[in-house]
Amino acid sequence: MRQSSRVHVALIMDGNGRWAERRGWERIRGHQAGGQVVERIVEAAPGLGIGVLTLYAFSSDNWSRPMPEVAGLMRLLRLHLRRERSRAMANGVAVEVIGRRDRLPQSLVREIERTEEATRGGSSLRLRLAVDYSARDAIVDAALRSREEPRAPDRERFAALLSSSPHVPVPPVDLLVRTGGEFRLSDFLLWECAYAELFFLPIMWPEFTVAELRRVLAEFEHRDRRFGRVAVGPGPEHSERRIG
Ligand code: IPE
Ligand code: IPE
Ligand code: MG
Image 1 (cartoon, rainbow, N blue to C red):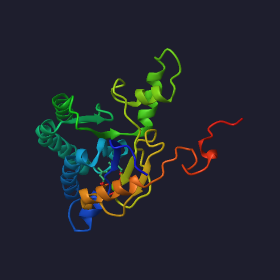
Image 2 (image 1 turned 90 degrees about the horizontal axis):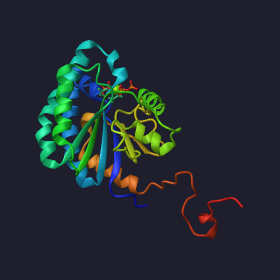
Image 3 (image 1 turned 120 degrees about the vertical axis):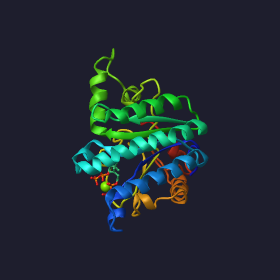
Image 4 (image 1 turned 60 degrees about the vertical axis):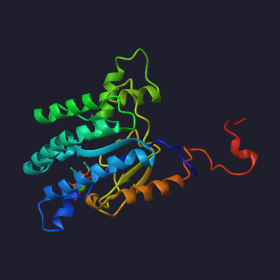
């Protein structure tokens, strides 16, 4: 079944550490290699029909990792944003960072702000990078914000409140890919993935390629997304929506 052409893809980029450890290397080398994969995926995304790409870069629970790994990740994120800024501008990629900022190093926050500012209005791809992100915290924040609303929000309004910029709502996730061999969401986009098609891959994130993403997208095209309805097929009963 053909799906819409501009999809929202979410990626849980897991397995960097194990990929490096298996080679007898420091875990940070896995994160470095993972960053290079991100560059290739972002470059290819618009050509693959992806309109929104949300990447899980650092979860709020990742603060409990050893300090040198956390510091290394913060440094890599800063370098990545700085290096990618001009390329994003040239390619029309609008970069947004979601998650908390008050616990990030100031130098990273400055890089985030510069990149968001410089790439605002890019229309080929909306790239959302989740840093110090927790879906449960995002839902609690949106619930707190909803108390300012004149009436209780419906689903659409709540989805808008979940977005970091409520005037630019985030479309639901169409497909989510997790590398690294685990079968869980680890507090990522719990609301937005209500009807996402899920793909769990055994390969580690540094082994992920554009060809693999293309293969996943091709499989996604054939998934029957029913959204609670019955499968589309012959016979009049399939068009019935109401009882009575
Ligand atoms: C994912 O890779 C990247 C981050 C969480 C920052 P991991 O670092 O979790 O790699 P594994 O799962 O330990 O192999
Ligand atoms: C999820 O991976 C977070 C990112 C990929 C950034 P984790 O490695 O932190 O998840 P768990 O601990 O295996 O659930
Ligand atoms: Mg992991």
